[in-house]
Amino acid sequence: MGLSIAEVARDHRDYITETLQFYEQQLHPSSNEDDELVRRAVFSVRNKAIIFERFIPFSETLYSVVQDVRPAEVTIDFRRQLLTCSCPQKNICRHQLGVILALSQYFISVQDWTGHWRAKKTVQLESLASVRSPESWQRMVDEVLFHVIDKKRPIEPILIPSIFENIRQKLRRHRPFEREWQPLFDLFIEVAMLKRLWEHLIHTNSPMQSDYFLYYLDKVFGLIDSAVSDVQAARRLFATEPFFDAIQHQIRAIVLLERGAPHRRLALYLGMWEKLFTEKKEIQKELLLLESLPSGTSDIDLMALRSAFYILQSDDEQLQQTINTIHPANLETFIAIAHFALKKERQQGAELILKAALPYLKEYIHERLTPMRRQQFTKLLDLLYSQIHLHEREELTLFSAYGKYGVQAFSNYLLARQRYQDWVALHQLYPSSISYLDSCGLKDVVSKAPGVTLPLYHYYAMSEVQQKSRMNYKQAVRIWRAMKSASKKAGKLEFFESYMQEIQHQHKRLRALQEEIDKSNLIV
Image (cartoon, rainbow, N blue to C red; front, side, top):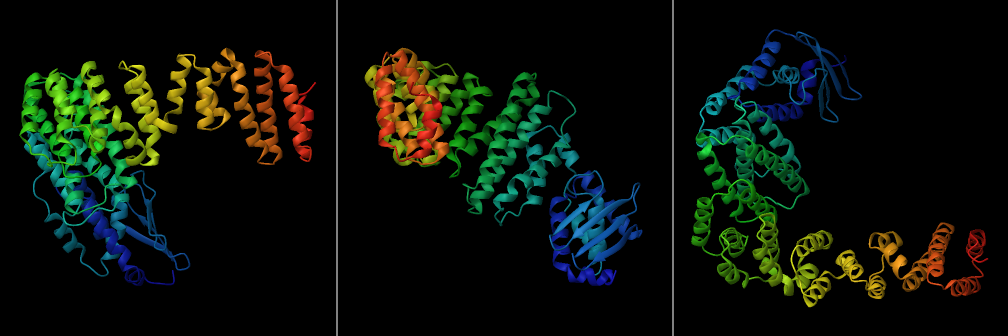
């Protein structure tokens, strides 16, 4: 092998130490499964069941075999810092840990490491899971979570999804056997983990706009939504009431946190009150609590939050007073409340909010929203406003606020009113592409008023010609064919032939274009 194992271990001490620290953090001594994994890994070291077969200095790769029920091949690529095992176990396995412990014994005591790891054991997770109380389940979540993350150090955003997936797997080992309890357990641990993560991010002043964090949020919200559906379908036992109270408290705590992804927090909160908490007593109690909170408690507007409960209580008088506070800074929160109202079939409340928001939409869309969100937000607005009655002036105010981000919605509006000339004018004001025109109803305009589309076809054909490539010339010819068909329907075929002759004359030096026109038989 060229080098002794002791020299290999000492040369790569940093990697071995870091890997051992990672295992120490990921494996929880209060978990029977993790304790068994560590016990068997240590057993393989003490019984010399780990054989280091060879080390290749050029690639810095160590090959070893662990003599188990079935031999497992463990490979360490020190250069790329990769540790792999041939066993079917995913992520951490006893063979990998055994090899790392066997290497670490050249500079630390394996017995001391094991004793230090086991000293962190507090209470068996099984015993916590078996006690059916929110406090016990919360303690179980905290036991696992705070063993993995350091309360004082921020988490790297890229690690958030994998860390919490590991925590989730450990907790789900202790799901109750009864079907009535399983969905509630899943919902409880997801909400509890999310609340603790958010508190940790705020406490460590961590950034919350990371794509990794937002990806994790979307995944968790999907899991919570699925668990809520399962909870709704399951029989609600009297013994589960304290858990629903605890979840309600946690969801409120999440929405009232100081900062971070406010619109996602609001969506989670409203989703719970839409599906899970529907009793009149619960609604009244939550409203009284929100009314008692001073403004500035959260980065989510409290007046908007209260309006959701005025809608649930059909209190239009209080709602009217609340929506008088709408302004661009809290507009998206009120839009979310209107969406919530429509889901709860409270048409009147939704209409009051949406009409009050109309004067502020233009400023919010074009000055406060990031360009990436404008298209998506206008689609949501179009969905919501399509469900209420608007007068013509209000509709025009709405589409004016959309600007170029609401071209498709305004196109559908104009088509419904057979305003084809205005449809063409809109697409001349906001030019796009022929394929986008098709999605906005070009075929309908051609069938009803083909003559008005000719200027549009001309514009897009000339845009292709200006690119001066044969591929673009071919596309221009395709557009002229569509233009010829529209001209024929409009009884303007002679105009089209004169138009094409003029095109050929103006671009007579573009030989490739002339060839494509000749091949197309556009002019008979």
